[in-house]
Length: 154
Image (cartoon, rainbow, N blue to C red):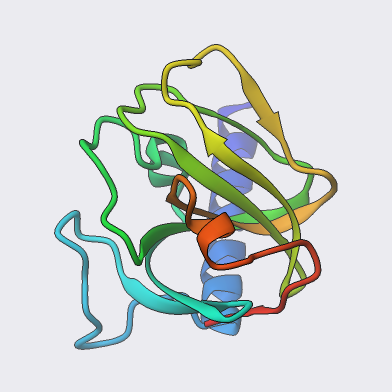
């Protein structure tokens, strides 16, 4: 059983490395890193741009923006997910409100706007299978007119 688990974990890691390289979200030599050690990328979404930290490892995907005091305007966190599937996010240990932008195949699939950090028991489900999730400061989507169907690139 343990051996199979190691094989599965090794396969998952190799798969993640392949997809990160294919999708261009791996840190390149000399790439700018956030103060939290995550690679930064510029995300274009609709008519807005966001400088986003890219997280892709299981522990960073789980932690997300938990335990942080805030997120400056124009910044975000891009979750590079290992598989396109329906996602469930929560506000575990969050200290500020956010917008959650669900992304599938380079388009906004849906949004959760002004998600309160005070309701940490609630779960937020993507409207369908997604490849990526972008978290931005609360109200960002409304201020920039972001809507389902908008193109997303980085």
